[in-house]
Length: 382
Ligand SMILES: NC(=O)c1ccc[n+]([C@@H]2O[C@H](COP(=O)([O-])OP(=O)(O)OC[C@H]3O[C@@H](n4cnc5c(N)ncnc54)[C@H](OP(=O)(O)O)[C@@H]3O)[C@@H](O)[C@H]2O)c1
Image 1 (tube, rainbow, N blue to C red):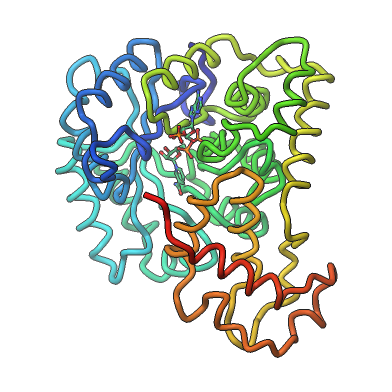
Image 2: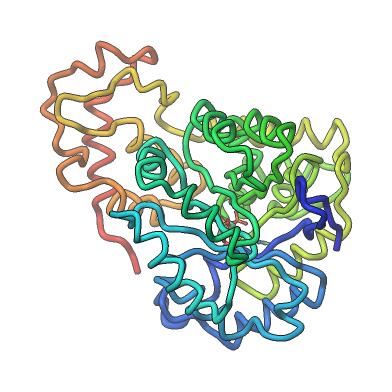
């Protein structure tokens, strides 16, 4: 395993960290972790030098923290930093910070949390962090020794990312979505470089885009086949992230023992600058090929918003495009069902046409909305 400096801390993190959001489960039920197999995977990772484990209040419907509390004992706790997160979206009043934190300590069977994050900061919830004075509460916990270091995970645009980084001088780290497909998405490369030069450790999540980049459709596989050094699609994705010296630790949410063993092997040989110019060129081609597999040429400019019928058109196009280009339509159907409320679904379109008059790409939005609703509302096949 390789190790990298963790921001300003006098500590080095393993290049690969274990994200515990996608542990193996029984009967397809996310709340039933296959504990025997998951323990085997996590102990193996720690034995191989992984020293950063990431969890959060909602993972596996609350069971991820409980499971880690059970298995992380003795030598499997001492050399490891455990990160968990405050579920900002659940907070209603100031006292909730303390309430959730104490519940988490109980679940984790621990007196303290090494790394604590404000979970999933975005425009929608950053105001709440300020309004409920979560910083004052977190500072008290750090002073009491209950929280080791404070960070945040992030899902929004670069401008907000910068504002959050600049807002507080004592951030130790941040966690961003970063992979070769999302180089310029959300915080993106600009965010990575900005946080790094401000002295924050950068923790990367979704390096394989939640698994999407592990299954190359044939036009992408043809690109990988041209490479001198043969690598699996997951290896291309992980190595691309590892190739950035600004990244301290890369979390992968491994769901099988084989994935753990493969990713540890990759992290053991990767160094910044491993990629040749030719490798980087192949990555650029793969990114472009994926983009061209997206059927709706939406650039997420948001000119069509707000829609008079309150349809989040760019979000719906994104779900559909992802499903098509990564050949994961079942996942897209689930995302449509889960994230787009019925009153905002594409079939609420009144065909007023305002969006089409504003769309710089001249997309026949009304037609697409009908078609997408039909495809994404059909039965999920499991
Ligand atoms: N704070 C936040 O807002 C937030 C959001 C997202 C994630 N996270 C954290 O970040 C962690 C990492 O994100 P992620 O889970 O999305 O990571 P990821 O590595 O991008 O995706 C994990 C998925 O990739 C596939 N995979 C991993 N290794 C593979 C390999 N060697 N070969 C083939 N497929 C492989 C598996 O998919 P299959 O299971 O389909 O095989 C696995 O479930 C999460 O587990 C979680 O701890 C935090």
